[in-house]
Length: 59
Image 1 (cartoon, rainbow, N blue to C red):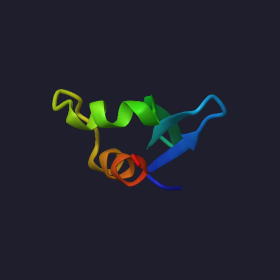
Image 2: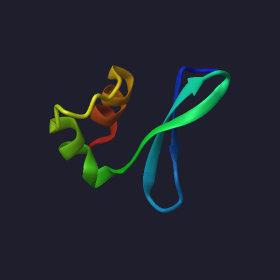
Image 3: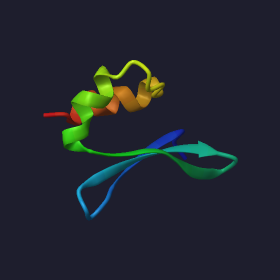
Image 4: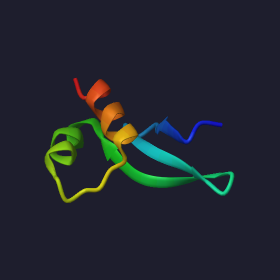
């Protein structure tokens, strides 16, 4: 199992999941339109893996 996983939901949102105690736990759920704001918000302490994924899919 990967430490991080990303689930694309039917309503257009993406849920970032982190493996914790052999279960995936939701970190954040966001839409593609939210990505620029989330990446610019330095108060959000997103793991580097989540930031990299957002950078890849933001276009």
